[in-house]
Image 1 (cartoon, rainbow, N blue to C red):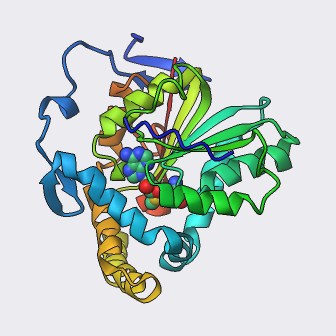
Image 2 (image 1 turned 180 degrees about the horizontal axis):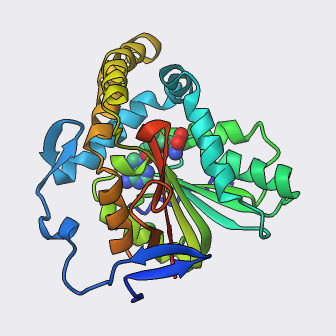
Length: 303
Ligand SMILES: C[S@@+](CC[C@H](N)C(=O)[O-])C[C@H]1O[C@@H](n2cnc3c(N)ncnc32)[C@H](O)[C@@H]1O
């Protein structure tokens, strides 16, 4: 089902226990959060500052340009490591373990995460009812995903659907409140203009007890690893972008946007400000670093 829905549009004590693990929550308050008070007119587009209203179309331009070579470039630039990160991200979420789940994969692009969720549920738990709604702002990326799913057993089943929509304003008529058990967003949230708006929407569409899980490039704290990683990414990735995709600028943006994304504790705080409960502010608590923080999974639960 390729449905292009084109609308682009609890108080807890500060410390509590969830499934036996210490976790923390922000008291939602009527005062705007630190991330909302500044309401900047300019936002980062990679290392550039651009007017807030133009970021969305600039990001769209990047993904229009990279859509057809996106999967190949992902493999080439990460030497296949993104597959390991995505495998680990999905298997830790154990989709299907407690029975069929309704999942939404936002900024789902070519469907990498959706496919893993459905495969995991089927292969591990013989579950053929878990479903994923793939949402992306970019029709070209969704088209690649749709084509890819045509080769799978999920094509033309209620297990998969594709929707063109903005993560910051999911259309409520397609994605009502309290609908999903699992919300995933992988390597997507840093491209969105307003991270708090994305988190607010994630909280809205999840059922109470539902999980928010974000896989994103993050902050490397080891100085040696950080230096090597910078060397590699700022030289090799734009070069590979030129050779394999004929597009240096888009890959330069993708690298720069990683450096502008908030570090782990700051992002965990934003997740709590949206109303989720997270683990403590340590690796292994609110977030799990992968490869020293090159990538990182943040999780939150809606109570
Ligand atoms: C780097 S790709 C990640 C795709 C996929 N999740 C993966 O891990 O392979 C980022 C995706 O975010 C999408 N995106 C950017 N801004 C968005 C927004 N505001 N709403 C929804 N999707 C967005 C882009 O179109 C792109 O497909």
